[in-house]
Amino acid sequence: MAGLLIILGNVLGLVALGVSVHGQPEAAPPPVVPRSVPDFDPPAA
Image (cartoon, rainbow, N blue to C red; front, side, top):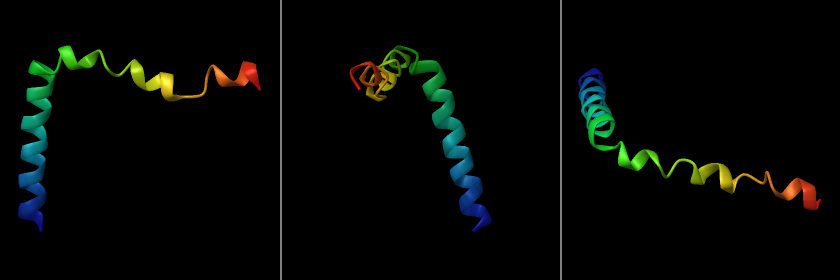
């Protein structure tokens, strides 16, 4: 089990590095997430 955890950790680390390097353009979508939160609904309520 420990070996699997270590492997998963290494994979996640590599993915994190890849995202930090090549995922910069993908950093724009996150602002779309707050829109899903009903911040604009309370005024209507």
